[in-house]
Image (cartoon, rainbow, N blue to C red; front, side, top):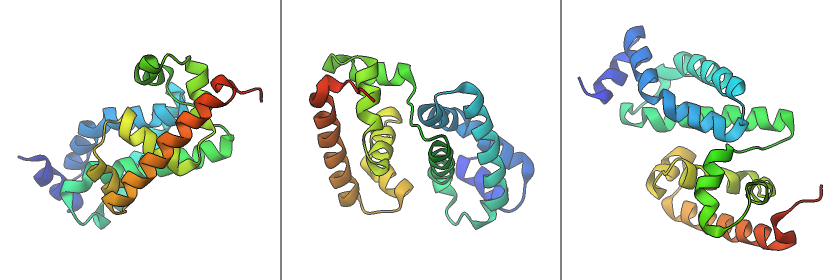
Length: 173
């Protein structure tokens, strides 16, 4: 049975198919939650909450092929809400280090530079470079045209470079 057929069964109310579909995307959900929340306990809690929300809303998923995109969008929304409540944005240190070693910036410099980005820019950077999503997939996730995603990504990278150049990337806040 293909993944789309599995999701189709879940949409029709098959709980076991839903659980199997969740198991298939569980790692991606965890990585997303960890990238936003930087805390294993919070990430696990986020997976639980997002699984519940997805279970309640799966009947409204129109295209089974977009299940992963749909559920990651739910996770991003949940994490953004959580981060707003906590008033902090923290990224997984290992992911940040892996992505930025070539630039020869310290982890703290990169984290600070990313924290100073606006919400949309942080979101685009995380989806593109931490989840290795293609522009097309980001456009589907954010429900906007690919050209818009390219523009946002260009501006986000420009802002990130500017943030890294200012103050040497170190925040005195």
